[in-house]
Structure formats: C-alpha cells, structure tokens
Image (cartoon, rainbow, N blue to C red; front, top):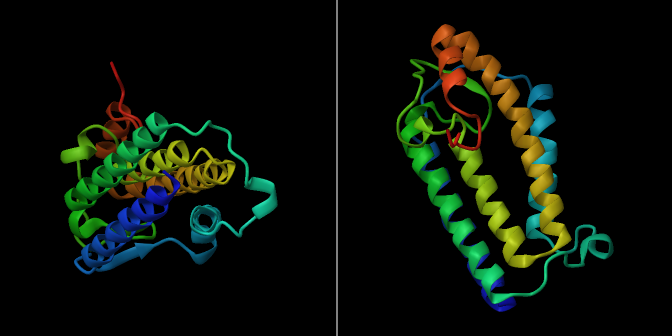
Length: 190
C-alpha cells in the first residue's frame, strides 16, 4: 500500500495542480485585493501544511509515527476521499469561473456564484481540498499528515474570515442572506 500511496497521491495532486494552473489563466482582472500582511496570515500556515504533506524530512523525528493502524480498508477509503475532494474542488472552481483568485480579491464585474457546489457550501473549493487532505491522512495514518491537515484547515478558516468580509462589502444583504442559508464548509443536513 505504501508504494501505491507514494505514486497515487502525488500523481492525483499533480494533475489537480495542472488543471488549477490552466484554469487560473481565465481569471478576471482584479479590482481590489488583500494586503500582503493579510495574505501572510493564511499563506504561512498553508505553506507549512503543504511542506509537511510533501516532504517527509520536515519535522522527521517528531511526526514519523502512525496514529491509525495499517489497513487496506482505511487506505482505500482515504483514496476515495482524496479523489472525491479533488473532484469537488474542481467542480467548484469551474462554477466560480473568472471570479477565482488564489488571494482574496474582488474582481472587475465580480458576480456572486451560488450554482453547483456553491448551493451547498459557500467555500466548496476549501471543502474539497480539506476532504482530499483528510483522505491522505486516513490513507497514510501518519501524524505528519494530521498536523498538515490542522495547519491547512487553520489557514482556510483564516482566509474564509477575510473573504466573508470582502463578499459582504461587495454584495451586502444578498451575501448576508446567502451566508444565513448556506453553510461555510460542511453542508447542513437539515
């Protein structure tokens, strides 16, 4: 399973990154963006989390252990979560279209997207990425992956706070109503 993990997970993320880069070329021009200081509040933990995911040398002795037993069932469940999460994030990115940005921005002619995955959660790209990382955590069972998930989740929660302020400023009561009716990351069951 370890060999499959070492091939499958990087390949899935690499294909995702290729799509992400290609799709970013169609983004609308930026009208307003967050400051560098604001950006660092979510980029630093995100980059630390990514470093833990991709490099076994980071904090090697401290995070080498497993917190889940080796299990084919857990491994394949993690694979399914990873692929599902990546597909959710791609679907969300497609629905967001030219409004997407890697930083918090308001675009020229920015529109409020409420179709596709945005009907169920306000931030489905983050939901999908977190589900994909959770899949890696479950498949690997390593503390390193779990700490990475915590860092990435913290980065996304911080970024969501900033995005919510921007969207409220841009769309006012329309966004406030959307916020009231649609969950941020996990769809409401009732």
